[in-house]
Amino acid sequence: MNDELEELDEESMQDSEALPTERPNPIIIAASLTARGGLLWLPVAGLLALAGKRKAAKRALTAAVVAMPIGHLVSLVVHRRRPNAANMPARRALPEHPDSSSFPSKHAVTAAAFGTATALEDRGAAIFVTPLVLLVAYSRLRTRVHWPTDVLGGLLIGALVALAQAGIGRSAKARATACRLAAIVRPVFSDHS
Image 1 (cartoon, rainbow, N blue to C red):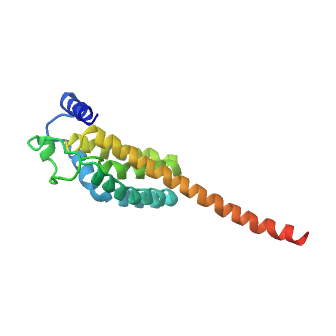
Image 2: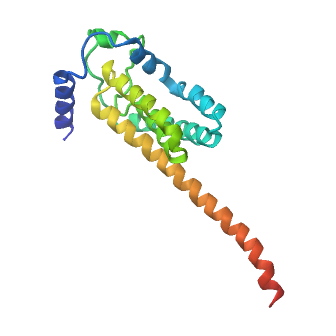
């Protein structure tokens, strides 16, 4: 199964016209570089907060902060070589030369967590954040740092982290509401016993 997956990845990167081998556009390079370590999402969260979307900014940033170490843990378990593209201009466009496991793309994990959490909290804000998430994910393919399945896996992991965070938030909110309701109802019933 792993051999089939690697073969599929290699074919998709070699035969794809969407992934040229020449140096990428500076915007693509900037997206890849600024998203390293999740740094890109700090100013994006700041802009969301300034736009009056503080709750979305907080949830998105929290999801990204939680997702990043999860991505690193998965990469410790899944040992996968990176694409052999060191001589391509597309690959040489980045100053970084990562040698960690290729799966998952931590850039994609963090971006998807941030984007999904934003979308779950504020769909209007997601209209602006989603293209940035997709640009970061594409940048990792275009610069030949990751296989397509690394990026897809990263997007899936990040989205799952954000969905889990939303579920935890809802259950905590439901417990808080139940406690408030119990505090209101308890005196009514205790007076009549």
